[in-house]
Amino acid sequence: MILEIVKRSTLGIAFGAILTFIVLTIMKLNAVESTVSEIWMHMGASMLMGIYFGVSSLIFGESGNHLIKKSIIHLVLTYSFWLIIAGLVGWIPLNGWVILWGSLIFILLYVVNWFCWYLYFKRQEAALNKYLHKNK
Image (cartoon, rainbow, N blue to C red; front, side, top):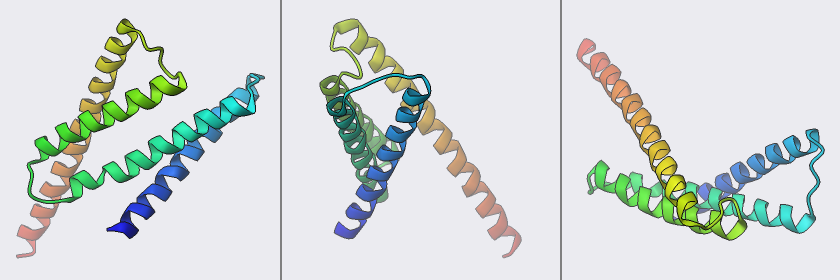
């Protein structure tokens, strides 16, 4: 389990670093200047988010709870972590309307993403069942 957490954390750091590199490339192409401390803070936040997303997917790997329950737990934890990080580093201003609209957009994107993955795995399940029945 610890090895899996380390592996997922490393992948999360890599994704956070890649996203930071993409943003830095866009900044360079648009001649946007920034300080080293600001880049350091945002890159650190991106890597923390990457670690969280890498490790939090372990919620879905364990059996026992229903998928909806796991998804709600994951949504609440993910939203809370995102809001704390985004607020601390200034990705979103911490005022009521921004948090309200940010929350609605976050939840909408989460639900759309969840539903797309659900349909994908249902399609995979149907194809596997079809294959198994055909080769019975």
